[in-house]
Image 1 (cartoon, rainbow, N blue to C red):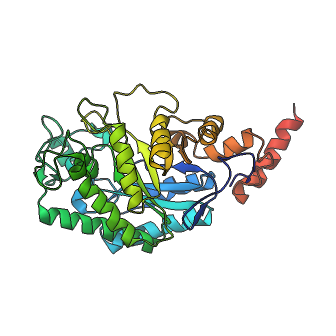
Image 2: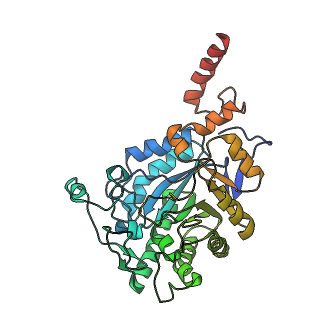
Image 3: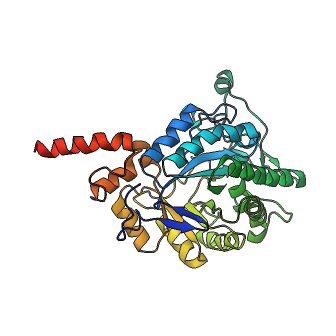
Length: 382
């Protein structure tokens, strides 16, 4: 890990409950769509392992289905059985062996379950997908509203569905603990099941789980309480939210501040502040003008008005920008996603570029001794 420098927030440790993160760099969940029947494989071990070798303090496994029918695509990870848990243990062990905190995001696709992998279209499954071997399954949601024309129509959840889905989140959280994960995050964003309960665009229920904001928050808050009860007291619990729908008549930032307060009251420690997704146009908001740190204002307001730790995410590409966000009190953690896909060693590269680790002493030993000699040779030739 980069040196624990007193003058750097990004590269200094950070404590949440009983857990000390080695730095504030987080690799957020980024779906790989590469599992078979939800089981992790060598792709996942290599994919997540390289971020740990690259110095990230915390690495999240992608959105992981708490039920088989809760997967977003046929290629999504799952944690609905002990076999799924056991397949994740080598990944967890490797992350820990490289000084990184292993974390996992638990979710349910809701009305966006049983859809195409993004490179096949990112829409409803077609005959071509079925011929390729994908399976289409019935889906559930708060209301019987398809995402758009041509998409599967979900069945509105009844009392049994609510109970079984809450049980599934709690069971998956317990398996995550058994697998050795040290942080659990609940996915309440991007138009998936729990976010569709929150948004008036997708929740048209007239019972206790719909109607006004309190009713629409009821089931997601129940899930948060169930997961909190299923994991150790010292274990941090994160929740990823869509801070805004970004669509007229949808969920707003004012709503998110209220939700964050209620989540904190139920033992949630960090709000992971994303946005959008409650439309067929992609996993995240396409209506916002995107630029460096475009979602930071969400993390800032929720942190300071709800008095809860937040994680900023969205085109934060260099350590200087991340440091500014932390020092301004806009967030407590920095999620660096696609930049890590471009450069899995982003954290160590940023530390080296800032002269915090000029001799590569914080790199994996099998790399560092090569790079130290390489660097000296380059400098000597100048």
